Amino acid sequence: MAWYFNGNYPWLGMLFCAPIIGLWYWCTDQYIVQRMLGASSLTEARRGTIAASFFKLLP
Image (spheres, rainbow, N blue to C red):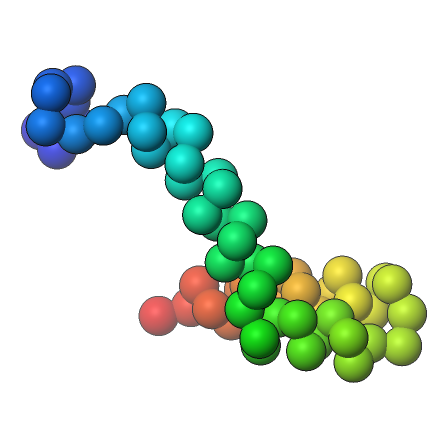
């Protein structure tokens, strides 16, 4: 089983640090920032960000 609690994996660190690292990535990635800055409205900026995240998750 891959997911179990032991002393080798810092679950508490992952629980609190992963959202911080994710926020840093999504707020400073140049591709996503340029999509938001180039949008003509807030709605298009949101759609562009969602589209960028969808395309990044595709294999």
